[in-house]
Image (cartoon, rainbow, N blue to C red; front, top):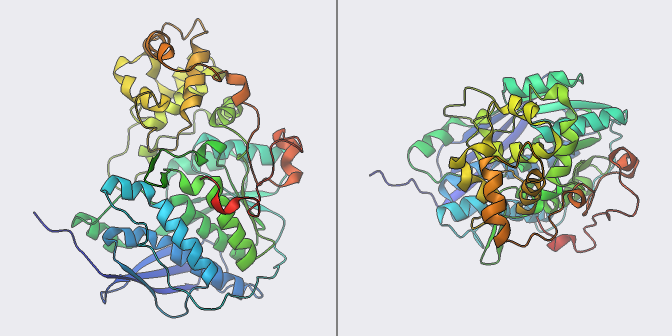
Length: 462
């Protein structure tokens, strides 16, 4: 058996921009530099005048966050930044993003990363950023699923100027993006091929905080093209973790959670550009509330997919948009069922997942019934329970195998209190949505409260 490759030092060697391309360099020990490339189509050859300092800090932010993909391959003890040292605020942000963003990776591989991730930094803090006068328009990332489409349609109704952006190559995402009728931006990301070779040789592998990486890429895009907002579509459920190990909350969606959003937005505002806003439009809502809104967007139903098997970098992809066998397929099917006619939902998936007894264990995990919530971007157990309880009252669903089983075997063994559907469809919880958009989302000024880093933000959930 080949031994796993090792290293003692991880180096961030270079970060540059020219002619629409960012180059990010990383190396282990004194080895050759691995270069990741990110291409911004139609971007200016040089950084726009007056934004050079902000861009340099944004580039350092991306260099640090994207490095998590490479460091985790060998998990070396020492991190070194060649050239200009990071400022203390950036180092502190990276320490937290790497630790919590790699929580699932560490748990799956039996690693303890606490105290192991320590970014070096300068002694003095960098001066505060100044406003850049960015144009009033938003970049809205799209992933091919329901959430971003709900955000885009909400912003369209509010007559907000937006561009729909995605990172990487995906015909499925492109089709969804084109259907929105909005300006499009497709950014290319090319991971250094040496990383795949390390994985082939047995390097550590697993989940990374992709949303954090994409967020940093979009900060650069906002500066290059001139946008003053980056609007994600992460809901309240993303802040709920999967399990607690020791004192560490392991959350597959950590970089989609409110904690990351507030930390990242705070750094962007303070260190890069105070007039560049970063937030999630759907933060006040549960997954069920989002699916209720998406159910009405029927023109997207033949196009969207939340099945992650469609978006693998390597390996086989499903022959249709839905594999029907993964936690994402199960959850989206279940979450949409209360808000759609049964024939319409079956037309999307091509099968009835709730009438397949062999899917019992998968749905039990969604219910958190004798199982841990799947390490996927799915809603909380209470949402799945509420959806099944609602379906059990409907004649068209209650005879399906897994709905009957929920009534006969699960309900008697759980606390059914608080499983009504309607309360989960109301806006609730903390958020950072700009006040001008509250009416478009149906938010009242007093509900929910605003999120502030100065009011417990440093130790909030996520």
